Length: 147
Image 1: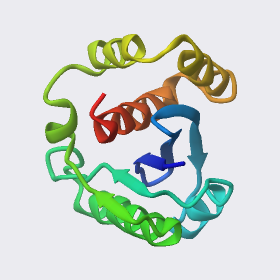
Image 2 (image 1 turned 30 degrees about the horizontal axis):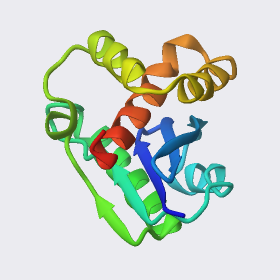
Image 3 (image 1 turned 30 degrees about the vertical axis):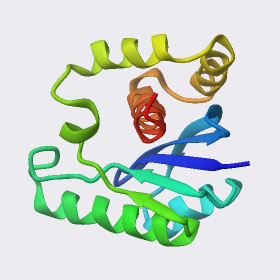
């Protein structure tokens, strides 16, 4: 059984998605104010064979302090998960310049009905304004799986 975890890192809100044997089995959001707290919030995930972690670039976060904080969070979480294989694509590499709403619709269409139910379950636990983080993590996972 292979496991892929995808992370959309953030300074406070971090989206995650877990795939087992190519199928989405869980997703959600952590809300924390330190890299350690984000890693602890993800302790329930299986150690992944593959980790896909979005790399932030200055275009994404023009504030240098925020860029560094997000990079620290991503690095700490990656170290805590200890993946066998690690991919670190930029947003431009994994989704291009498509607007979020259009891209999230495309992600939803690529999911099976069972996988859409996994996302719907996560959606009831989180504020609608933060779900873009979850959708990005799910999309990163699809990119990592080449789906």
